[in-house]
Amino acid sequence: MNERHGTHHLVRALASTLATLGLGGFASFSSSHGQVNDGESWPGFRGANADGTAEGFATAVQWSVPEKKGIAWSTPVPGLAHSSPVVFGERVFVTTAVRKVGAGELGSLYGSDGYGAGDPVDDEGEHAFQLLCLDATSGEILWTRTAHEGVPKVKRHPKSTHANSTPACDAERVVAFFASEGLHAYDHAGEHLWSRDFGVLEAGAPNVDREAARRYPWGFASSPVLHDGKVLLQCDVQDGSFVTALDAKTGKEVWRTERDERPTWSTPTVALESCRERPQVILNGYAHIGGYDLATGEELWKLAGGGDVPVPTPVVAHGLVFLTSAHGRQSPLYALDLKAKGELSFESDDEAPFAWHHPGRGIYMQTPLVYGYELYACSDGGIVTCYDAGTGERLYRERLGDGRTGFSASAVAADGKVYFTAESGEVFVVRAGPEFELLATNELGETCLSTPAITEQRLLFRTRGHLVAVAAPD
Image 1: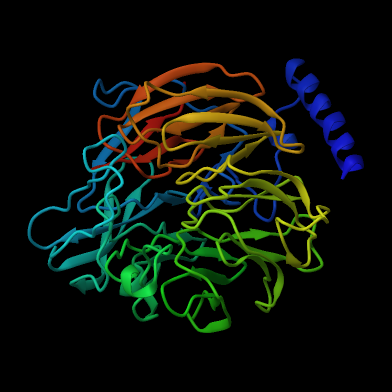
Image 2 (image 1 turned 135 degrees about the vertical axis):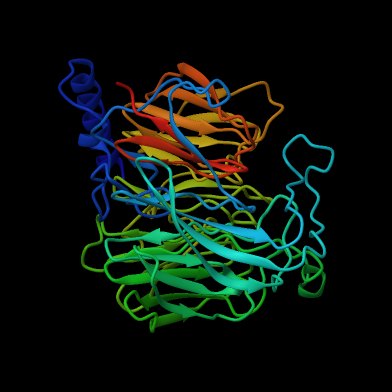
């Protein structure tokens, strides 16, 4: 580990020097673990590599939706959802759940009177579970497809929705996952290709006994991943948790691996870097954090422990996987070698698989961001901690905003800037690097709990009632 860390510091110093001289950028030193972000696509949750970054073009620093400054377009989107937009070429896809009678409401937001409430929302009636396609240039809705209609099979947490899972797309198709209401695939023209029903996927209150847990259904949130002709799904629920790979053309199951796991809300990550002999899909969890062979579903390594309500997605960079969760006793933030094998333990005297490990520093709702050689972790209350990604050394710790708003959306980065979105609709733009510098605070004008998307043309934010495109700078 020491040899790798020494190399890490040399490369990090070189990256900093080249950037100062204008001879290099984050693209040269950010890790790619499978796909290349060409500036035209953001095909799944947190982009092409699930790493939340895009490079090679300029992105906005300042804008205001209420003042209509720096905005390319703003399109109303019906219903209630926390799913993020995804982009392929000139098409933007987003999902939503629309109540047939009345409108869905959000509660239990950070700082509200009901913050932390876990009782589900009752009796919302029938919903239309929809996939929308918009023109990326104009924001015009090109088509809407209703994948399912009916009363949701599982109730939701007051801060949650019935459309939390971000869709995934490639050059041929887009897949929308509505959990108990099924997985549905369409082509870019809106033609239905196939659907799969996985039965009732009940997620909620994992840190109580099963009977009590059923009184606190919170809704499903893991998003599908499209990779190399496969759809990957993590389904950690009250009974019968599993991870599976489906054929993207037909929806037929390629493999399925059972998991001894409680409910989680994390999205899988595909890792090719540093493990090309056996590419793997990595899952966060509580009883079963692990890596699985991408081709067969065979378990490669397993780790138990951490926060008991796992939400953040695994992040792969620099030959490491970064994992965190922050509900429960241990609440770790740590970096694990991608070549790890077998049963792992936080309690073991053999720390070889861990590059570093910080108990008690985990984050709850947001997925961390690795950009260049820094790792950014934002708490629910807006406290951002920046670490050296290779060593875990803390570089700074700063608060965004006044502490009265929460942060649920995951940070994204581009063009040497990191974007942190508050639930209140403020977006804080921070200069990337080992020293904190706030560049701007921008207003979306509505509540926002969804992670944004980035393309060469614009930043895309899914707010409470709109899809907003922030224009690229002139």
